[in-house]
Length: 155
Image (cartoon, rainbow, N blue to C red; front, top):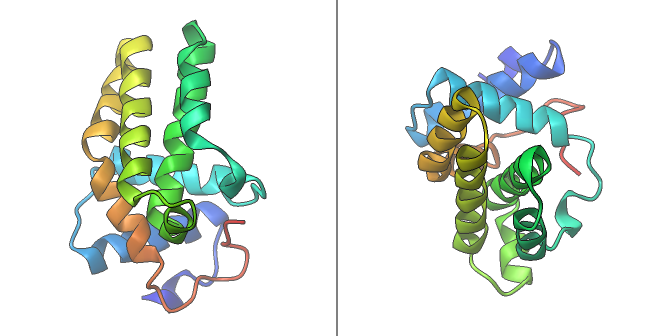
């Protein structure tokens, strides 16, 4: 299936990679989960600072904010932890923490978003918090794809 996603928009390419990884890992994602995962991959594909964050400190700083600033900061923490846990688990080892450290911070961040946002977003982030380990597993499955097309790189 890797040949099927060598051409297309970045969103189409990431979606194909997510679908193949989900299939390979035996995980079934809801459409909203799949779409959100593609959104996160698109959002961070050119972020050279992704791996330089101190996620625990970012989470604590996010908790000190109020209103929409809190929700946005928590979302960012949840997104970055998701990518690190799924795509860069070696970072946990280098920082002498477990992948579960990133999973728990990320799940907690998404749950925090669910608690401070409007109903529609609360439902989405509650669902993402519950399926966080499945999302991580799919991202981890992307690591085993033989080769992602050019342009689909997270820095």
